[in-house]
Image (cartoon, rainbow, N blue to C red; front, side, top):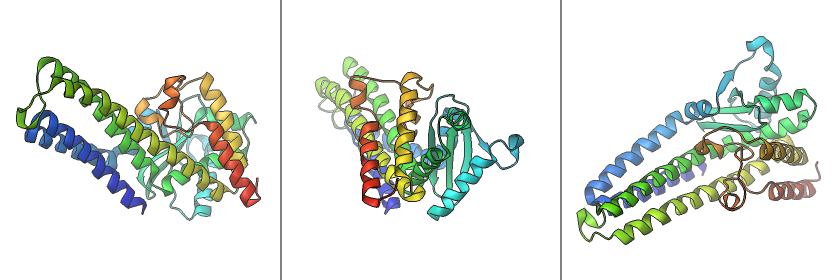
Length: 294
């Protein structure tokens, strides 16, 4: 079922780009944007993990490396993935001082779980408990199980492509290029309207996908770790620090983090790829009440 969702999303976003290309440049434009969507989807499928690790300035860690300082993290991921009945993902560390975590990769057999050095330091200093870290890692395993990383990355890439196209449409409207089929019925006002509405629509699609994924991964984390309130506590701690100390990372990769790593208030919150932390905590409290576990 999850694979069907991935293929469906790829197809939908590809059709959207081809449709825009056809309106802007007729059959030639449709073909051009079909090629762009094909390259984008293939690239995101095969190289999303490497791209994301680079954006977060992260590196892979293995048992015994770096003096064994991350061996306990590796063992924790291994234990939790066995509880979940999943393949062992690659484990990585991001050098960012903000506490956060993310998962990336194209499927459970080719996945990465990454925590930031800031997260690891919180546990070392005793500000975050081992149970809370386990719940965070279980959340990332939830993303992997449901192919959220690939879906989210494709959606973010498509949103970026639509925004780039929107800028092209604005200039096309100003100089009288594009519009209609094969150059007919050029309508600058329609181009301007499409240039304004297309990015908003793309952002809304990305936001809805990402928010749903976060709730689903939270619920999966509660099942894998058996500690929904530990995740709720971790989310509140990470969110509190992230709001005061935003991360320097590309907005295209921010949706992958367990808590939005970027600063933003006012209208930006309406278009956030993450649901409000209070809502996530409330749902985890509900899960704890229904299951009778903390």
